[in-house]
Length: 578
Ligand code: GLC
Figure 1: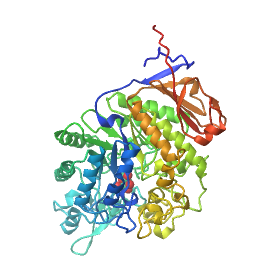
Figure 2 (figure 1 turned 45 degrees about the vertical axis):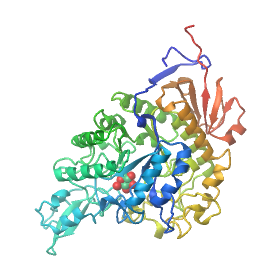
Figure 3 (figure 1 turned 120 degrees about the horizontal axis):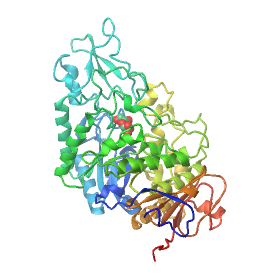
Figure 4 (figure 1 turned 120 degrees about the vertical axis):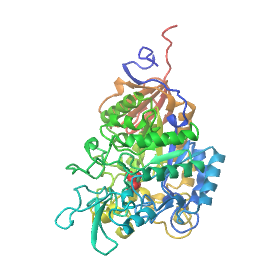
């Protein structure tokens, strides 16, 4: 719609940011659901989720009406970073099953009309990967070492790391090895845990290896790849010292574009080559970048027409519920990505951040990503968090573009907080001596059926992380039976979003709703209005399609929007030309 076709029912100015876009491409408006295999469903009873468990519950995701499922890593791995430390990219870890289990899962997804996207971890592998073991066994000048980033140390006898870079998980980003002859030797770079050596993307053999991996999974039928730390593969020549934060978390104003380990121009040729490989398999296979880049407009560099198809929008995740910040991020995202013809994506939760039902349970600042929450920290207000999470999701799912959901958010799950130290598994916990608790809280196994052992996650061993008490009441079967549950709200939102084709729609800000405590936009004829203030607000004329909170709706009369509530309102557009 254009600025001069202002709906009659909506007095007040509009600012058009994005026109409706019906460019073909399933991913452009898709809702993609992230499955974290360790915590989805444990069918073999060992306390850890598995592929057979995913296959068994896929019908529930089809019923939720998502377009695709992205699976976090299930490859062979010593599990030092929950599978993001891969020792064999073309096999399934026995913890999760077998390649046959993968094929069965793929077949079931096809039957249900769901696409599967897998995680590709190209920045680093596990120190148990055959290539790294060969590198350790080889002489310092051997070609095996050149698959990774080995350097001599500084200091008189090489006892100091080659530069000052820090690991994302805390501590130095370098570890010294013992040479095959028993002497203290070179150092290798690891932007993450010491068990995750970084590949050397200046080496063609690394390119060839990953092209093989891409084809392996494409041949098995996957619809694409989520590319782990896609901004980090190439490092600046000479590995210059970096005085800023070197831990790679560019979520909040971090000048990541200057860091020598991020956003190097040569990265883009890698993704162009991968896109050509995907194109050999038809137009429907996609690449999605996990690229933490600042400032936001630079994200467009990852999704130019011959590069990736999507990139996660972390600035949106970090905008919280601040209307001004949300508006700025949405506007900047749409402007930047429209300029390169790429769709936006929106996201509020994933396996690396505190769940949004918990983050929004704080009135002050929520804990920093990756730090987690423990019993000794200020505690969130669970009810408030869940209500606000519903409002935030309804705001997000009205936006044009694609969206990512994280398993369990449809149940309004909070983070696990009472996790005993000895059960915490995120390497961040160990590498910071417990100072940062890490990401285990958002990775707690899902509750499926109330009253069953482990709330139906698995009937054998205790889950690998303990479930909070509240998971009983939040179990999927209980929620499925309650019309006003979080789960049923998600179902309604997803069904309406599809029916109204909101993902292909437009966005115009409703200026009268752009205040310190509210934000509103028009997508086609649907007004999406959010109230983050403490007072109810009057709704404009229109038909209420959906409200985020049954409880708030009861507190606020029909014609008002309650505190902490979002509404989708159908507006009647007066035909000014007739
Ligand atoms: C990404 C993953 C995270 C992992 C890290 C290292 O950020 O999302 O879980 O620890 O990369 O692979």
